[in-house]
Length: 296
Image 1 (cartoon, rainbow, N blue to C red):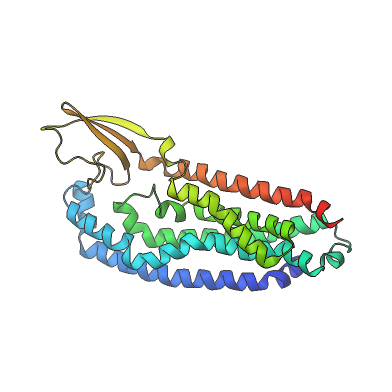
Image 2 (cartoon, rainbow, N blue to C red):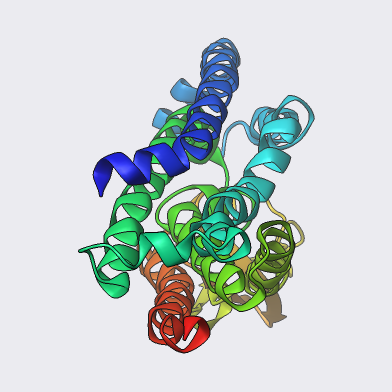
């Protein structure tokens, strides 16, 4: 099965390798540039001495430069790659066999069709996990200086660091496999799988997924109505550069701050990743269950 799977999916493997190589080159170049700028702007010393309170202008300039501009092509590519790659790899797995009629030969051999499908799913899924983890590690390394002075709890960094990218890729793959079985057409399954993946992805990205269900509230004393306090203060009114401040209200000489602590990054990643994986497992489980019914 390993040899057969490689022969049938080597084109997709080459595409994955090419994408990984291109992402690595761009991410390393940006990471080196970011580290050079971080050092020349003196941000390391400022963070060590004042936690960022002594250099808000430098922090704002650094985050503005690297949250957009040169980073934008990589960011846009990473937004598209999970859905695109999941569709390209997943749709032919069953769609191509059914479209060409080769399933009659493949499933009349000594390997039963369910074992055939499960074996292929295990091998291809393992390859996608390796790809997703590699991209996540490269992206996280590249953005490390930016993560020290900005917020990871919202897109784009939340989508590309931690578990999110790999789980999103597996979600797209599972939906494309199911589309291939139902449509029996590779190209149609790619299109259907991609747009099916867009639904959970856009919900999570545009609405920040589960981000706002674990907020904390703090009351902080201040003087003269807290004139400089807002949700966009640098550093945040909580004093931690990684916190996502959602709302600041004033009550007498106190600020009431609603925020998402940076420490909850991995908890939220587990929630979001779990949602993606649940969709992937449901789609793949349905494909295995329907395999006999669609071909008899």
